[in-house]
Amino acid sequence: MAEPHPPGALAAIIGLEVHVQLATARKLFSPARRHHQPEAPNRHIDPFSIGLPGALPVLNPAVIEPAVRAALALGCTVDLRSEWDRKHYFYPDLPKGFQITQHRRPLATEGRLDILGDDDRQRGIRIRRIHLEEDAGKSVHGPDALTRVDFNRAGAALIEIVSEPDLRSPAEARRFLKRLRAVLRTVGASTAHMERGELRCDANVSLRLHGPRTELKNLNSFRHVEQALAYELGRQRAAFAAGTPLVDETRLWDAARRQTRATRTKGGAADYRYLPEPDLPALALDPQWLQATRDALPELPAARAARAEQRGLIAGQADVLADDDELFDLFDAASSGAPELASAVAGLLLGDVSRLR
Image (cartoon, rainbow, N blue to C red):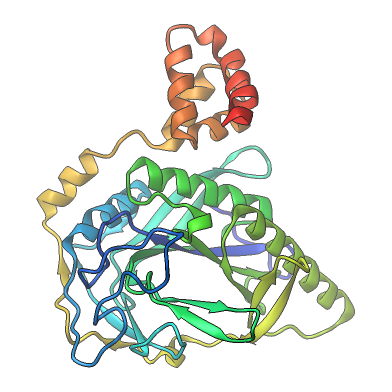
């Protein structure tokens, strides 16, 4: 597990909130089809997705299994009873004026994801919670200074995976996301393409455990996550050195200028006016089904990496192979009967083969 952060030290403290679109054919509470980018705007909508008066949510049961598989693969405790809440905020792409989520009693809590730390040793990054929620639409800002709204993804089924602030560098955050994507793909919870918006990340970053923190919103590539965190840590260190006060705030990453920019001060849970969702019963899981789902999980990336290291690979090589299903299957087939060839096979796969893909 992560070590406590030294009080007063100006070292990175990073926690991630990762939104993952589940691999289901339909949306979370409606029969509308889940969108696949790129598609024409507003083709996959229905009365509930666009918030028409009187439209009521009906849970799509197909979302439960992939969400639970993800939670179990991350070592979480899955609650046999979870509950729904309304999270209120105004934004043009949220036509109901609230989002249905799980605030008081989430699907799962207290998990862990092992990654290779900056010291080349395995570190356990704690998972605080995983909850189900519906996605919002997408605001498209045009060159004509107009903003248009695409509701294709409004109501899509998400899980939000919230880590503890255990990450200590932008590079560790990138490795966490890559390993998380590999786990999600391995268990079939999501295809997790960041470029399609199927995996999006908000990063909370500070230089002190109880000091002011910045939330970096809507990071949509591994490179942007690492670059945005590096810039923000530099900005905060410069502010501390100059004696400039820092405040809790939300910032966006401007990839063109390669800098973050402030959008608003950070709010708290009270600002969202969470209320129990009156139109949905609690989600109840059968304990026997839950155990059967746990027993059916495939070999996970951490176990694959350990097997690769047993064949003589260094930790970095093993991790990269383990996070790629296709490459690892090739490595496993080629080296299982001849472990003395493992290093040569890994070098070929991570070099020439990877460049040809």
